[in-house]
Length: 110
Image 1 (cartoon, rainbow, N blue to C red):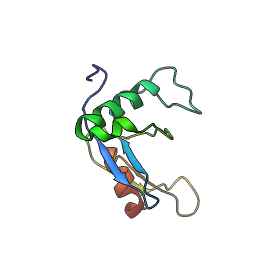
Image 2 (image 1 turned 90 degrees about the vertical axis):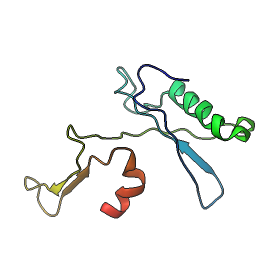
Image 3 (image 1 turned 30 degrees about the horizontal axis):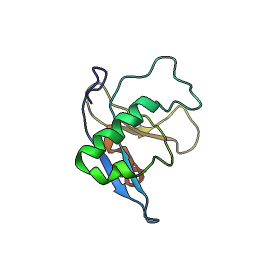
Image 4 (image 1 turned 30 degrees about the vertical axis):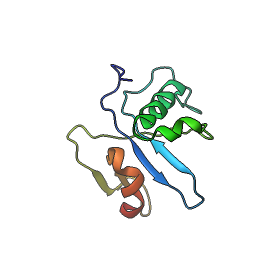
């Protein structure tokens, strides 16, 4: 189901060590008025589940157990933002701009 607010339709998925399957992926602009404590957008999660079912029909038989959300930070030029923050004491660094690759690349970059 395509929504004009979405930039792409894609699926990120993996199986965890305990056998759960995690699906996600949605690129939308910031949701105005979202609760900053719990900004989960149920409509987006339902659309992602529906999109997953197009590829894996058996998913229709399963309910969503947990939902979460996160930011996919894109820099204006598409490049990574990596470097030491000189204004802060100690060894403070920023590693950002990995967009939808952050879940997989972030731990290694850190």
